[in-house]
Image (tube, rainbow, N blue to C red):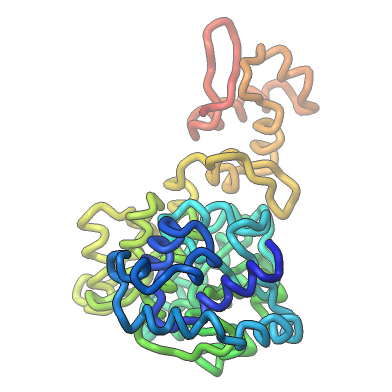
Length: 369
């Protein structure tokens, strides 16, 4: 993308009130940021959900120079701009119906971050909720899963800290701009996350907190994740917005149960009643996640076809790595694996029980699809 195209994109992105749905409608109608800015008032008003107030803001944006100063400020703060045309744009996020046209990013997003799980919940969490969020996030991070959350107080903070303490990867999705971290006491936490993962936002650098941007942010948390874990959400919790986004995006929804008489977990219990997967720990999450759309190379330089492989022992992983998608005779496998025959056969049985390999007639073995 040229500098002029990027500036047009930033001019539009800096318009307050231009939400993701309107963005998608405009891009579908006019094709590019430049096309949107060149559109007449009549053409803009012809787009549904587009009113006179937003049309006036669009007209002002055509001559707004604040986007020009945004670029050097990004460089000064170590923030990269990632557009949908960039190879660095997260593939899973690009699949949702209203992906952000531009992401502000501090830190790095790697191929291994395709194996990510979101975790959100109440800001006014109990000690139980905080402990469980940190425990499960830490265990998943140690297994090689990236933890995605929203940098908020409470469960979000516990999820990020669990991943950091486990020396795993974590991604924070900030509702506010990256030069205006909210809550302000999480500035240091944001720096730690950027050093061990990434902090991203669709908001311009200086945008502060406002009511509408937090629910809007939640679609990015679920969009970056294979599934979302809800920990301690009452029936009015914003975490339930993330669960709804995950369902709409075809992502898994997990809920951690609490005491049945505790209103802090009433939203989680409703989700479980309505079909969300009840979890007790990280193994439940790994077991429930389906096959990956394409194999992912982890931070340990292992190629995974399904998240369940993360829960395998070293011996199970060694045997599975030799099994291919094309049928192989058992004798070929035994010759290729430097482990005792009896142990290989026992391991293959375990992998078959875990639905990771299949036995075919004639003594052939194949990876389960």
